[in-house]
Length: 131
Image (cartoon, rainbow, N blue to C red; front, side, top):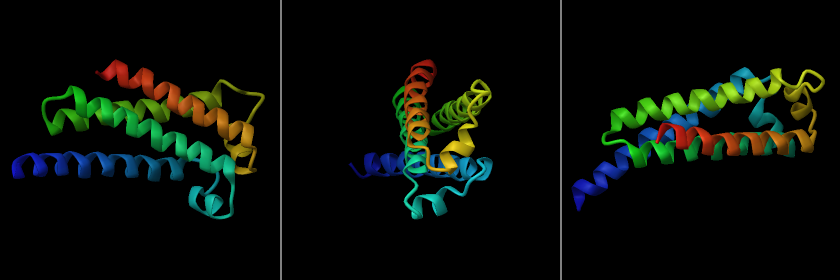
């Protein structure tokens, strides 16, 4: 039992670090300061960030469930997380009439929500792809 708890703890800690690191990287790459905006009550930023957290966590779920060891979990989870961040920036590029990052930073809830949906939807596709 102790061995199982230690194994679960390792997976929990390592995948949690990946989730937190991805959110930190996302914060560095967008035009607004995620936590400052959330602190001000910017629901659009909270939705977009929440979608990333949920999406990356879903990818980690698939990586944990389909890999035999922690190293493979980290590799596939990292690949999936990178893919999700790429999807976010592709969303920005593929909507030239809409500056997604600016709109989210300004508090546009509709853009924040669609960003949330994109992150969660693509996390299922990515998760299934890495499984």
